[in-house]
Structure formats: structure tokens, C-alpha cells
Image (cartoon, rainbow, N blue to C red; front, top):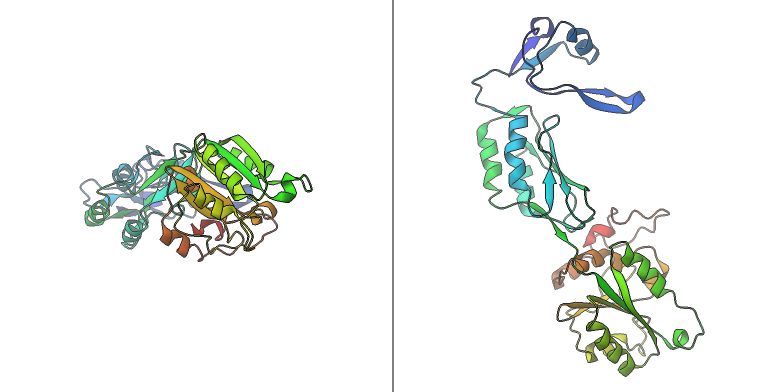
Length: 340
């Protein structure tokens, strides 16, 4: 692009979008689009925008314009269940989830692209739960144009799509509440209503519930029955560190397999995930009843997407896995929630 004084720009074609910002009115918008032919009437407005000169695009320029860079790269970034702007605004194209699910990004390739310094490609965290139309990423080059070699290096990291959304798979859940005190009616159960509300947020229907005493055989039998009808089974009420708790033992007896007992996240250390075939069976501790967000909230979206979470993920979840106990819970945005 070539820089020219405003007074010499009349009749020339603007080489880039020009943004107008009015903080008092909370306005940020495109005042002039790339390709606009400058007229005498534009000069005063451009002066008001702080412009004394502008850049005009010259044909034959070998550099790649920001709009062309974005339009070239966007289709290569987008994977399954991702849509994006067909035309850039101020050189930027944004990406959106086209379904409810878990946002996925190859973090290492994202790092390599941004380490080129010319591209700007911010995204949500990997494994972030998203709803349809949620913005998940944006791409632009930082300068108004760049050398073609930069775009070639970005493309080299996009032999396969960089981002996608993995849709939720589980639709039917069961909740088994254990505990003699609840079974005998001495205290009122709170797990079924709270877990049902949580699952409803993900359009998961609770189709079976049961309240049982602390008897391993009864719990095991119920787990087997629930597994035959549900995608996801919660067993609650007996997952503390007390030596007489029987929930995890009952799950083992029912054939549920799990690699890790508990997790580093607080609250919710005793939240344990197991599987019987493709059915997730989770031991839910009392912490889930008393706190707004626990390890259950961190791992649940990935479970609903049908993922069998690797052992290493549990071990790494301690980094950022300490809840802030904020007055207004910012799940799933706070560092606590993205530890998965």
C-alpha cells in the first residue's frame, strides 16, 4: 500500500477498513470499507477520525492484504461443527460453534501459528463447553498486509483443521442416591434435584432414579440395571474418605472399571469416573451438593461428549483446579473451571 495525504487522496481507492470509535456512546464500527473511493465530502470526517493521510492499495503489490489473508486461511482453520464469517470485517474473520458441545483446538499448532508474530489467532480454551453460535476463535494478520511467505507458513500448519466442536453424545442419565439416613427418611435427598438441574442445562434427561441403603449388593444390582438403560449413571452419597463407605466397592462389583480414584481438584476430590462399556458411571461426593462448582462440573461436559478422559488429564487437573469460591460463580470461565 502507498501512503498519501488526505488532500491528495480524492478519487483514490482506500486500501483498508478505517474504524470509528466513540467511547461515550460505546460505539466501535467500520467508518470506511476497503475499496471505498475517497471523495471531497470524506475529508472532514477522516480528519475527525484523526487521519491526515491514508493508505491506498496499488495493483501489482506482491504483499497479501489482510482481507485476502483472512479469506485464504479461514477455511483451513475450521473443522467439524465450526462456521465462520464469509467476509472479513476490519481484516478479521470470526469462528462460531454450529452445535452444542466441547470446543477442540490443537494447542501446539495454535502456538506455532501465533509464534510467527504476524498472524493473530486467539481461541477459547481446549475442551471448553460451548453452545450453538458461541464465538470460539478469530483470525487476522496484525499489519494491514504481509509477505506471502508468512501465509505459506500458516498454511503449512493447517494440513488438517485446527478447531472443531465435538457434539454432546449422552442424552439419558440415571441417579442412584445412597445412604441409610436418606433411605430411612431421616434427611431429605438433595442430589436428585440438583443433578437433574445441572443435566438439564445440557439437554440430558434423567430417566431413572433410586434411593438405596448403604448395602453394596443393592447398589451393585441397581448400577447394573441403570447401565442397561442410561448413557450416564451418577451414584452419590457414599464417596467420602470414611472407611465404611461402600459406593466405589459397589461400582467395582458391578463391573465398572476406572483408572483413577478421585482427582486433585478442590472441591470434589472424591469425584470418580468409571466406565462399563460405553456407559460412564460416576461416584459423586457430597461436595457436589454444597458447592456451586466442583470437579463434577469440570469433567461433565467431556463425559457428555462421550470422551473417556485419559489418566494424565486427571493428574494435570490440579493446575488451576483450586476453586476461588467467588460470590458470583464464573464457571466455566474462571481458571478453576478450565483446568480440564
